[in-house]
Length: 306
Image 1 (tube, helix red, strand yellow):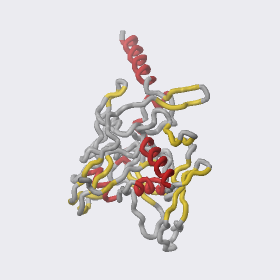
Image 2 (cartoon, rainbow, N blue to C red):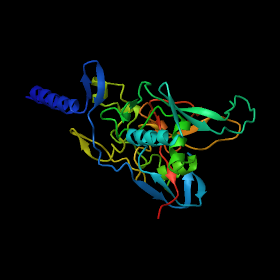
Image 3 (cartoon, rainbow, N blue to C red):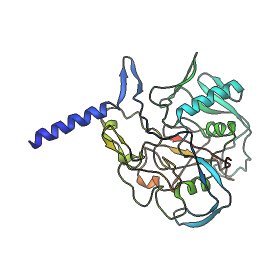
Image 4 (tube, one colour):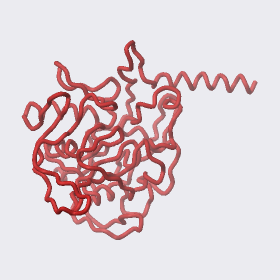
């Protein structure tokens, strides 16, 4: 009886997983099944002025102004819409599947290992790169089936900043990002002091779908870890104190800071390719501003709206 029960459970589990697995078509994968997380990708959260504990050593740090931050990472659908609008406006260029735009350059100090960032057109996104879910054809910019509410990836720091600038937003500073992720206590993760197995998209949480079917889909829909059940799999709510999703795991998030004596830009939050220690609110990563990857995205901040 125990063997029959186990076999039945496996069959039921596989059936549920198949409903969320990549849709295979002749000539290769064309998309995946869409998963509605019920999270509003257009929502913003208010982060009030005040002190909070920054870094692993909990330094009391003041942010003396209110600001709003997106509750999710920018999605493929949002970025595709931006590309359409900004191409029509002439603020970006598209040639040979490479999206570029003008950047005024950075002050150069000639410091050891510093690379000069000169004024000129910079790469924003290379369409057609493995992992990029945005396409361009005679109908304009479109998103691969099922990926509209996944975080946009294969976007450089230049491309993230251009999106923010176009709409009058900006990328968060590291301090703004960390306060939004942590709140005002000394928690380790955005949701508290412990990390549940199904609370974020990170390396140790490689689920059965990924192991059995397709490892080329590292992202989950934004807001996926919100306590809801999908195909028989229940997630643990992973919101930050201000109601933000995916502030740990899924994709690294670009921040805006341009530091003296280095050309590098910094990212926060960890990704699906990282272990638990990279999901802490103080963890950071860095890369050149023209770098892109399947595990790098972003979200924006803005002044409070009346």
